Image 1 (cartoon, helix red, strand yellow):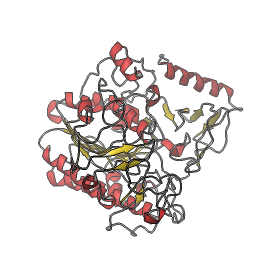
Image 2 (tube, helix red, strand yellow):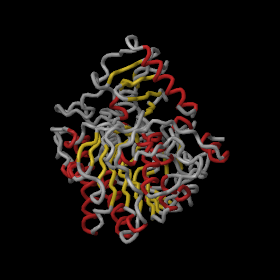
Image 3 (cartoon, helix red, strand yellow):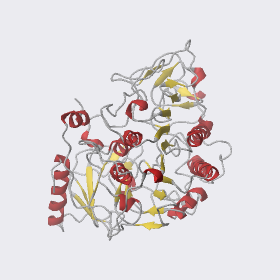
Length: 515
């Protein structure tokens, strides 16, 4: 039985560790008439240095900059994980993903990873009378254990974990199947052309990047040499479903229009929209409106496309007159990666652009650029514009929003999420006592104050695919982030007491014991 299910069915909650800071100005729960709409827009593989509001000079993101100027811009916000599936899992469940065994990077035909017994963030909003929707990248699996059958009604789906409406990309766009799923059914599927998907062996007779490299329009740099869809070789093998295949250049438009339609249809009632963009994940295939416009190659072009998406959502809220009472959160699922499997000249065309800013690592990594994310919060009715330097973790979004709505969480629900509403809304400038992170190998690190401890690991030091430095080391690592934000100097030997204290705290968190 999966860990999450056992926590819930036993009725036992993980004890939460004490020590979250609070300011003297207390945030109050909203009244029923004040319930804000909530949009949580999570970009993919976007770096904290990819936005001009965070200092980028080689690419301009005016719509996201406007969102930042009108709201609270965080500089010390973190995801739970440096890869997609676990990061999203932590947000929606309020539980550290490393507590559950199957939260690695999910294949495109994965079972639904969040157990239907889990009371998710969407369930919480639904219980408070919200209309709930998920649009865009999902990457948390669909269907029962054993794999997804895409040829009929897919159950369980996101509607079984709190969402009224779904329009999703099952996994990532570099993985098959290359189709959209709406309310449990593949969009546009011809029943006479059923879909078959495998991540173990080739199925059908569709060309692959390995067998037919002359047919590809985007060459792989590593992997990504299985079934070719729209001239792009993917991870995994697929056949069938030709009428349902997406067009890569149109994905941003399709997702954005679905999100706008959801907002418009629920403008007269409180709604929660969880929106995941494909941008800026590989394969980076911008719409012709953006292709060649950034000067940084396809990766820069899809940053412009992402900025357009944010602008479209903001314009929709403005045109409907609901922007003032909409809590709009924008962030990324993990840190940036340059070459993630395709020859798109992302590295060659950086031209001085620094997606990681001056932080070490990136996607997959235990170092800062792996989990330190751009994080913006706009709510004109309650949030004063400004910079927020307080320590914050996305795992705490769940309990914070529950507190905002005055919603009492059942025992065992969101066991690792702490109420950090004051930090989220900017009235507390200290933040939580600690942040825990994991890298792709499940190596854990913890930040407390100026200090970051990375536990010892015998896992590989370099990710073979991207050549990313993972932060794994058989020796203990300790960094003073205030003095050394780039994590260049491991000072564990000079501060054994700090190592002991942080290692002990991390052990308590792992076991669920109180501090």
